[in-house]
Image (cartoon, rainbow, N blue to C red; front, side):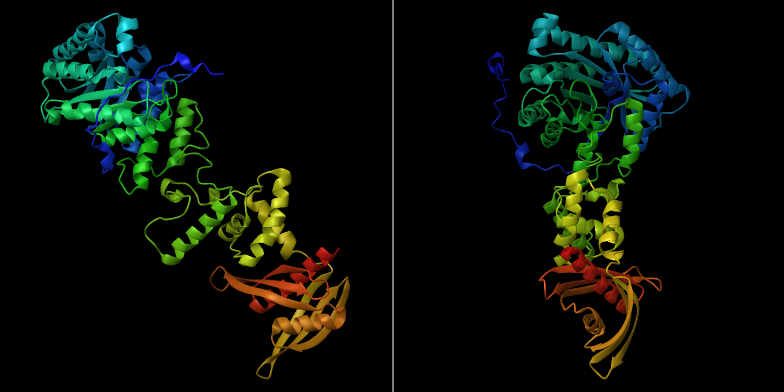
Length: 554
């Protein structure tokens, strides 16, 4: 049994004045990618310089205007990477790079060496402020911890005086979620007082969920409380850096935005220490799905996945909300049916608004294909098989036929698992189009007789014997049925008939579907015929159905 008594509830802020639950996300925040620092340090095999450059270029292509590129004072490879960006003039004028550094003078001095030649830089300083770390790691009281932050700010000011570019300060009370909010406010205000930000030269205060400790609503309360209690709030950019220890990093981020956060630090696909950082792509795509411009270029998800997996050597999960290989896939029969009907309704109504059951966004909007939407296995239903036949191959099976053909596919899927669209088409062809025993259609000549009757001059094979016969009926199908009955004694009744064009133009074909009942045995089945001539297609469908009836009787 789990020893749950070893753990205690994390205290939460008593904050009845909260306003965030009544708000909605209206616009994208400032995005800051930390893939090259926080994400990179969490890799089993950290990126080499060229991989870092490829990732940096991807982030630029996606539209990130703030990118944390490393901890140059702590790692030679990160120092070299930063200098490579400078020497190769790879940092666009409208992009601000960010470097992380502890509040120590020799590290800050080394950092300012690394950033020489860059026009604008965010220097991100931090120190841990949580109750637990003050006690067991640093053995310091509040004032001593606060002095570390103040001294770090002074040092950045000192080196910034001689720096030819623009320095933006970012301060993080690390382990904010485990810090008393009054102390978090006190230490952030001390940094603010030392730096003296203005509305034109703002200070970034970053409140990280370094460890996600409780439910997202509690984090949102902390963020709103801080936002409403900062002095000179218009001189502060309130940033969040959520981790995912409880698996709710995305929810915590979205609630933090409701609570007043202006900026989000995170990584592509949520890569990061332990369970990872917040997945910026998911937060951005969530906004997109609500009609909000995420202000990132995210319409080529397959390319993002390919570069990410190559540089980070981590696979993107098949169930990732937007990038996973199976997320625009339905195996469930009821889901497949609903998707099928939704896509059809969208086309018929010519709607500009995407509304399809089970698909919050159009896969093609993010560079995915419609093809993977429906996958057929033993859990799939008749609607999914019909969807594949329609969307892949243009066969619009009549509704009464769905169950019949789906039963054939389900039997196969129970034996082998998933059935690919190509195999479904092969089975369909063998079951309906290429079945030539015991009947084989050879030739027919149809002529109208009077106003209502049709004369059919039919040639067909029956059990290998060529038969020529004539008959008159009230249409091509009826006259052919009568002709067949004359020679074989098989008496049938038409239960259902539909037809449609396949394609457009002079080379278009027609597909005909007919359901026939054998009056003697009581068996019924569908047949399918395809031809450039609709009459010939319908007659082929009759022969297809007769052969399937014979197969049933065997």
